[in-house]
Length: 463
Image 1 (cartoon, helix red, strand yellow):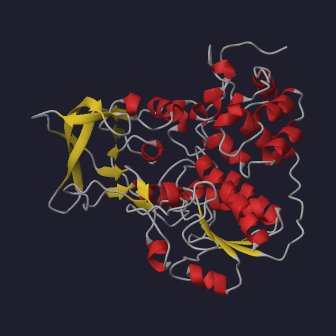
Image 2 (image 1 turned 90 degrees about the horizontal axis):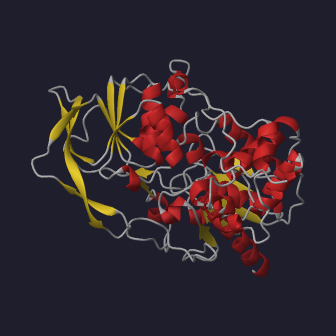
């Protein structure tokens, strides 16, 4: 019998006043009993509307039914048929705007906790059944993947399963992209990312780190080295700034640098890891997305007493996940909404002393569908802070474009591709993820990697 409760089984979490002082995972995961109870809420709809919202086409009702039957290993394997990174997706995908958005149970209550169940199945398999991936017989063809983030990892995994010899070229000293440099440990433990990447290595995928395509090698040289196709998944790592006075003062960070120091370079473990990052008593984070929430929650954990989210619209327009906003508020993050910064203030030594802001009101909707913020006259005020973190978005790094002749891009830097295949303007070169769309979600990047892998296989089979 289905469990007809209108509410999801609650996920155990660390208490807010404890977790905002450590970097351990906030959500603690379901027990077997909790997972079976939540899986029993699924109606196993024949038309599976939830799958319409999944960019990688996970067979959602089928894996949930296996959990309900306590076949947890089978549930994981069902997810893995289409998803390369289930333990990661179960933690960071915005299910509320994707699969769970279309869940029938969400019409009169809360949707089935699809993400929570995906995480449970992946964690169960890793902890109880993980025996590595089956070795694949090579077909002798070589493919280069530029970038070891979600789109590159997915493309590499799908191609490896088809018998291709895949090499990932990663600029950092660790593969994972935004999974290792951007998303904090308390949302996505790096041990989980490492396990998922090791599964790709078990498939035969090779990973070369500290290789910057465009400097160490370029795309043309990859073909000269014997690769028959190239996938570009270099992400969107170039931070955007507001170009306001004072952004060059000491104590101003891009969210990209701030989070990379903390997550990839383990600044939160200083001096065990020799990468310090300094925050003062008060910190302002400019922006309203998930990156802004991550930066604010990290600053709180590093010892800042007052951490402000400064956002020019209201909470209804905020692009961050509701869960992340909820967690941030629980942890003591202060939201200064309808507030727009216009200048960073500093002392004679060049250190930040505050941020000048103006109050905003919402006007008519703009092209994004959100109401446009308009400044109130004579509403300027100073927010006293020691640090300012700019988290208003990232764009693709221009290096690959600058060093790859004939690669067509948008004016803002995104690589132009055929949406159905991921093919670029160059023969044998494909692209996907944030390098194409600008900063987006992990699961959308994975979907682009899957699309390109299929197209690369068809291209090489017909070559």
